[in-house]
Length: 62
Image (cartoon, rainbow, N blue to C red; front, side):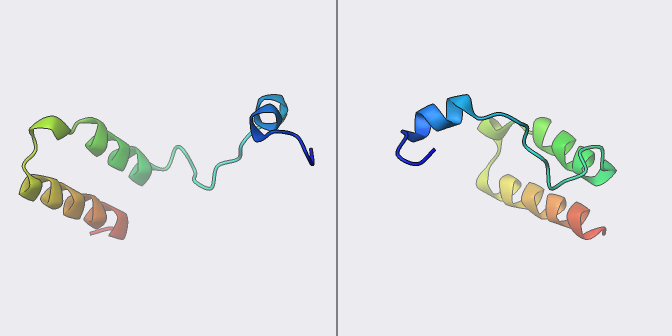
């Protein structure tokens, strides 16, 4: 791969990417759902901060 353009290396690489996370983790699913259900175009800055705080609480288990 040495000397080849990165785009060419990226297109021709094989294998698969492993995840650091267990994708069926219920906490990750809950966080994903929280984010997907957000209407970010209509959140005020304070609502966005409050939602971020809620997500932090989910991660911490509170």
